[in-house]
Length: 203
Length: 301
Image (cartoon, rainbow over all chains, first blue to last red; front, side, top):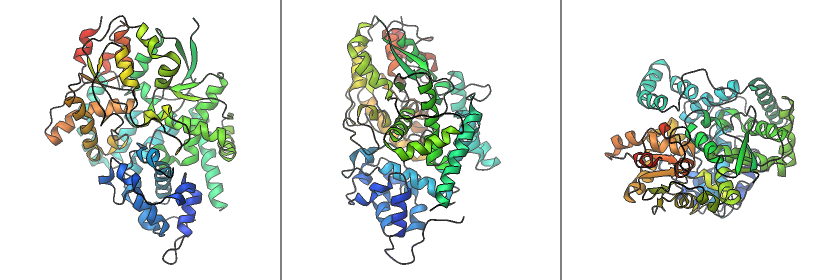
């Protein structure tokens, strides 16, 4: 685990972790308004793939269960349909909070093997170097993030779809798509990283 | 009549899986009273996964750069046809506009690329522009080849309905439940919208369907089943990722659940291009659909 500035609760019902989430996670400032009605979990189309669901996860945050929260499948399997966001009677931006927790969990090394984290790494690499998402590059980087053998297996399994996409003119066979100012964009992203690191260090 | 000008953000899918949305939109813009000027050298918005690796501020900086470039081209509203592009760009625009701290942080990052943006543009979705600025009647006026008898299931998807509602995250999403615009588009084209209420704003699994389809096949199955029950000839959608997922996973769903789906999934703009009497390939881009919309192709003039 990396050196973390996130407080680890020393006793039960220690609010330090909850307060940290309220102040540092996108949308977290509205989390104290959660009244545990369960509208979010009840509205979730992919709740069956979640260990806790958002309602329970939010209570776990209050209970200081940092490890369990940041290793929960709930933050990884959100499809971002925003059903919970539009339905929450207290206007808690549930999806945004789950996104924010996913970023924190990935940065702190909680879930290196999760599909979402692997896919995001592949995706971000394409964005950072080329300024655009190249579907071919993202999928290939993602498949081979599971190792060479698994990568070949996944690539072959998806080859029929890729062939149909090429045939339909929706997947090119040329160089990756790129923005001309990808270099400028890299400088902007590096600066944004620097600002976030500076803010974390200043906490 | 002079055309309404928009600054257009096509998004990455316009060069790949969603190329037929971009192509058909440009085609119908020739017939309708709007025109697009593309953001020069636009970049990715981060979609729905970038933030995990990229982090919150770098993700905001992606849309910040696009908005700064759009502002250099003028003050026209920024429009995008993609659900994720809309959500991200709109969200960042609202943050820059309303939150001085966020504005400062994004601009400090943008400065490293010699750019700045103060939040004075408006970000909109193409469908909302078609309903509110162009108008359903103006669409109807262009129909020379009505799609009579074509049964259309209007599948809006989840993220696209945000433009019809208020802005900030967690804000007043007032009209997210039963948006009617796809049915209005289909009707204007002379087609027949079928009842499609359960799955209309259901989720196709989004990017989870790309990296872990085994978790989301059942979601896409619901979307297909309601269309099949309603005897739809095609599913119409505005979202590039919905179009891709619901189309390309039908074989996998059939294998997993023993179904026999083979339902074409098209963009509303492809329906319009055909109804406007335009070329089926060059304008409607029907050659890009992997499941051929035979009944729609039959109607091409």
